[in-house]
Amino acid sequence: MIIPFGVIIFFSSFFIVDVFTKIDIISQSVKSLILVISVFFPTMLIASMTLGYNKYRKIYFLMYNMSAFWLAVIMYTFAISIVSAGLYLTDVFVYKIPYKEITYILLILEVILVKYGIYHASKTKIKNVEIKNESLYEKWKDKKIVLISDLHIGPTRKLRFLKKVVRIINDTNPDIVFIAGDVIDGPVFDYENILQPLQEIKSTYGVYYTPGNHEYYNAEPEKYFPIIKNLTNTLIDEKTIVNDTQIAGFDFSEKNEHHAEEQIQKMNLDTTISSIALLHDPKHAKFLMEKGISLVLSGHTHKGQFFPVTWLVRSMYKSYTYGINYFGGNTSIVTSGVGTALVPMRIGTDSEILVIKINKD
Image 1 (cartoon, rainbow, N blue to C red):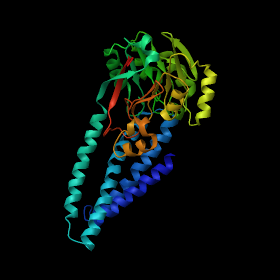
Image 2: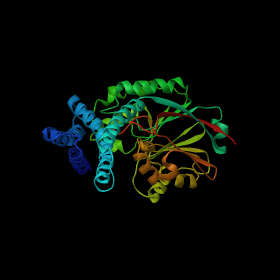
Image 3: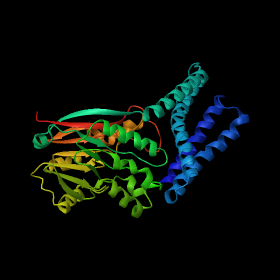
Image 4: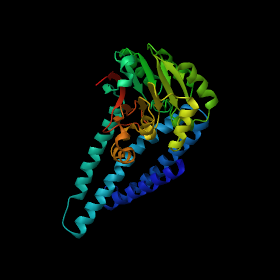
């Protein structure tokens, strides 16, 4: 996956250079330097992700963050180059347009937008959510249920970020905390020390976690999973009983609904009584509600994380991209997550911690 992605970025960069040279944004004297940079950053991105997959080095994380920041820039610059090419052709064949001046304005706006996106991604918000759920009401009506997902601890989000998240969670005085997958980003690091703040979460009924897809991008499951199991109540196709409610953790899977049915049977879930399910990817959330699970908690989508990816994700997940869905008296909640994946910015979405309260009607 990494290499084709890098190739796409590489050729996008060449397109940008050609367009900007044609419209005299880039001079011929610096064109070669820009082309070298266009080769360097995709190569560094591929190298940092490949090397960091197997071995932790600070230099790999530095390379990753530099190239991830550059990726944010190149994405919007590519969009601007398409607009600029259209303006240039219009100027040549139809009527005069100040395409060069417009391109400069768009580039300035891009710088502002990227800076805002990076800043905004670091500002975690508490969002209070009230849902109607008669099945859970009697047991959870006066309780605070906290949901987080997609921390993506690794090259970009590290110990300091996790400490901040834990502090915010504790400030809400939660009764129970759920982590719906993607605690780590994938590359290896010092899990024991950097993930230690998770043990400092204070809640009445504890912290419950199930893995997401990024846990399985990691090369050291034999090191990671024993540590996360010491720090949380980890449920991997397992259930437990908390406050007379079944808490079920569905392991991440890209398989169809038949597999979700098998997971229900494996856990021996009684879908006739109240239950809360952790399901990282919400693609089967409706199916679980149809099966009788009272509340399904998910993440994974990041709500698209930044524009225009938000449109793409929305086209894939529809109403399960973000927020609350109901089916037959049961409820699904999808959070936009608290961290970021790959590009460290958010535009049109928030880094959030959900505080959920149960109402009867």
